[in-house]
Picture 1 (spheres, rainbow, N blue to C red):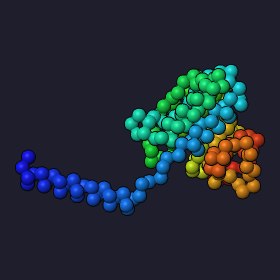
Picture 2 (cartoon, rainbow, N blue to C red; picture 1 turned 60 degrees about the horizontal axis):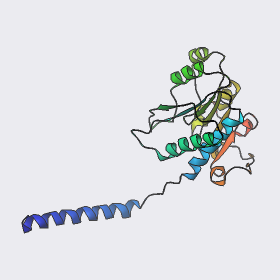
Picture 3 (cartoon, rainbow, N blue to C red; picture 1 turned 90 degrees about the horizontal axis):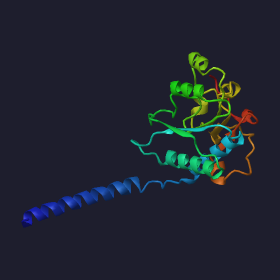
Picture 4 (tube, one colour; picture 1 turned 30 degrees about the horizontal axis):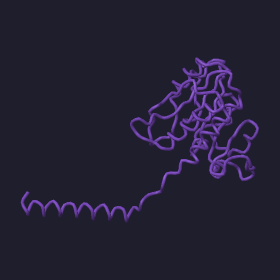
Length: 216
């Protein structure tokens, strides 16, 4: 390598380094990912599922992160699985779905209907992709089957779905929602982990009135 080539390469490295430094100074190092709230979500979902009794299958619905990594989802899946295993009720199966990261995370309703149709009332579905939203035809396909559904319903999902109707129709039995979706009179549960409690709350039939209502 002659001296001119070496100088050129050195100059390119200096320019690249300066560019990287400038980008770092403009954007900053970025927030460090905190797995604690997501681990707490997984633990809370598992606790709610086991509260219904675990006499049947336990099915987990989660996003497929093989192509687009998502640390939050990965931690939630791990936490659910570990919590259930510690209690002696490991997951029966995990159904992964490729989801559009720019849309509200939802499990495909047709697949949801087919899954519920094959389960029994003693089975439990833990969904990191929300509850089902069925057409009349899909409800007929499910029939009278009502497995217990415990779902993560954070973000704007309560604004887009009629959660009360889902509870009434027994297509949702427990939900974790963002605290911003609660009325100001909602009492904080003293037993929940603080990192979870500050952001989320568990909603069931006993405190469904705490949810804000939206026109549907």
